[in-house]
Length: 434
Ligand SMILES: Cc1cc2nc3c(=O)[nH]c(=O)nc-3n(C[C@H](O)[C@H](O)[C@H](O)COP(=O)(O)OP(=O)(O)OC[C@H]3O[C@@H](n4cnc5c(N)ncnc54)[C@H](O)[C@@H]3O)c2cc1C
Ligand code: SF4
Image (cartoon, rainbow, N blue to C red; front, side, top):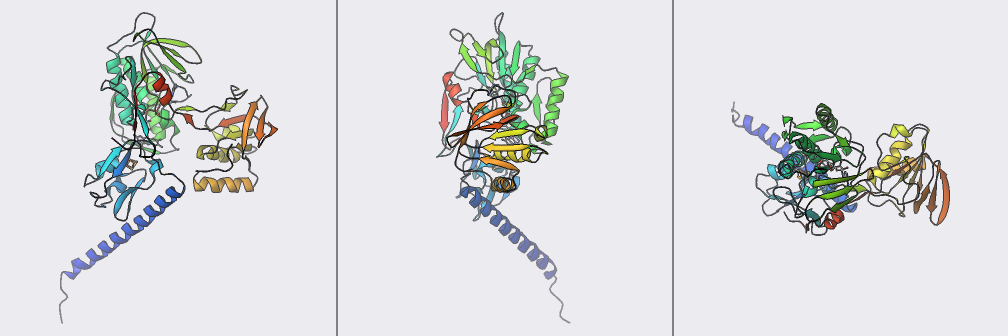
């Protein structure tokens, strides 16, 4: 009897493993290529903020970046790493940190679409004395970094107190940067006010999809100490912050947008106007992120309380006649969610001729819902005026009165760059540079 070579016992399983690995990589590449193609066809090719650029000459195609990316924004195509879903990249840098060949650099903006980055000193003060910027507005996203910047900015601000009758600092925004700065203001016993344009805590985090896992790291918070944050659900993170707000009785003025800023004399502080009042302050901390202020319709009756700029709870619209305005994913998703509520009548009004760059799934849902009569789509239309129980819609040149109980406007946001420039803050546009 001929004895089988003993090494076959090792080689065979190894070959099976290797074959499995190659098949898995192939399958992942097919998926990554399909995602890349789909996003190209939809025109979703621009990352919103900081994002990775891969040097193909250095990339060894290890796939470590794709594994590390929690958003599945990067993948391997033709043996090299590629940003396959640019519009969902949030600039974690987890991909760059994981790359064994250091082939990934994080940059702002792209050749086609520049990104405006305000000038900020290491103290977080801009070139305008007394105006500070912390968080994503300064270019660096991420919850931990925004919080850390809010804390550090307050340490510097605390050195320049206001005079009698004025605040030491007005903090604008209650996202991670503004909240941490607020804790810092309490810790340093400053005279301060924090204003937030929305009626909720958490800034961008509040708007994440339900149950999203937030990838973050331990962060040092004033008064609280080291918060051991890691991977945490959006809801738990918001609950954590709410607990802190309650524990330290943080004064946060919700539904109060900053509307106008005027300098007092030469570098002696600012007057900040909101719809509710006017503040005199020595320093101003802008922790307003990059999402901007909701774009308004600018029509008569828009100040009616039934008009809102985002959908919070679809169930509150049960049995109501609702107009949703907008042509993007958020408008479509809001319209569909409300149309599913018992007794709700929904009209989706969009000024364009067709819904352009929306997710294929949303387009499909919209077509189905509209074909089934669950909602009415009104293209080439715009709101002319809003009254208590009706509104006037201009549909391709013809005015039509609709019975109406609620209006949800999802028309995007006005970015803060023009306001920064108006304040004299130097802003540099980056086209794919660090
Ligand atoms: C989909 C998505 C997923 C993400 N996932 C992660 C993640 O997993 N991990 C992570 O670390 N980061 C993540 N990020 C990034 C992170 O959310 C942001 O970097 C972070 O929230 C920035 O904090 P901020 O305080 O600078 O700004 P924001 O959170 O944007 O807060 C700014 C606040 O200022 C308010 N404001 C704006 N203008 C005015 C005004 N004129 N007057 C008064 N108030 C105003 C806004 O309403 C808002 O509440 C994600 C981002 C997105 C979009
Ligand atoms: S920066 Fe973050 S979201 Fe973007 S590709 Fe890298 S790991 Fe993914």
